[in-house]
Length: 82
Image (cartoon, rainbow, N blue to C red; front, side, top):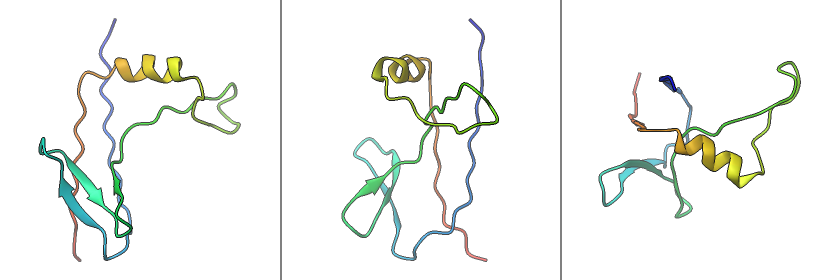
């Protein structure tokens, strides 16, 4: 088995009432105004043809197998004012 490092960085325009919150374990998450929380993380997408439409799997075993390969994950949130 070999190691694969994947770095995900997104820049998003979000509503002003979104907030950054922390779980009891100190994990940062986003607090949405409707009482929900959101975490942005990896979701594997699949296709039989790389030029065609990509979609997530509905096979929980496949998804769990991929997620079990993840040894660590780091997500950081920061509001930037220009």
